[in-house]
Length: 242
Image (cartoon, rainbow, N blue to C red; front, side, top):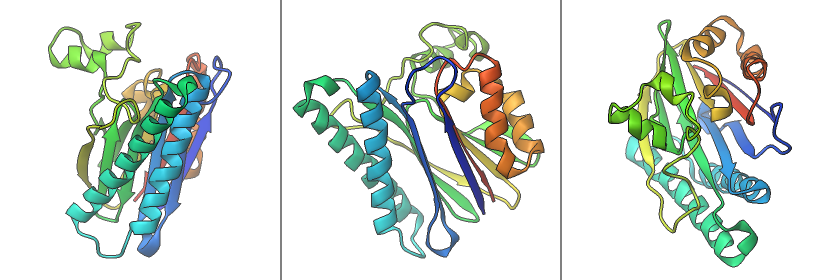
């Protein structure tokens, strides 16, 4: 298993409120995490950094060889719930952080399956057998409009409210987490990213870059592609090759 990650401030923002973490844990199990903070400059930084620290710590301290599917799901939930509690309580105690939160996309990866915990609009894609497709479903206002048939995915990219998310970690006492199992085959590649990439680059372009470049170059190439299209947001990319 190979894992690579990179974050970039982009061309417009003055700070980078994204955060990520990658690791290979015991017995070759991979771990990847992408967070996109919200709630003002300090709030976004605080929320994404806290989520990265807490989720990574809980996973590292509790992952064990031979864990069953349900146990891995429970571990992801526990980690995200602890991050949610900490961020929410911090905002209650410190008014300058009121409303802060973060997306979370966390993955525990074995040679045969990726176990995913997802909140917000950071995305997971899979490249399998030459086909590239989005695995997660955004928790966003425009996604709800797409589901209702009011707009198309292409129209959603142009809407001014495309960045409004309907779920985030830390904005309420409780959080609803999507849990997914993704079957993997040898040679599959996974892409985890914030909307600084997916909001600027088409699925076709991301899939082409993911498919033709060595794993060590993919993160740089994807970030460069987003910056060529304006770099309007922070850009974070994690790539995994099974």
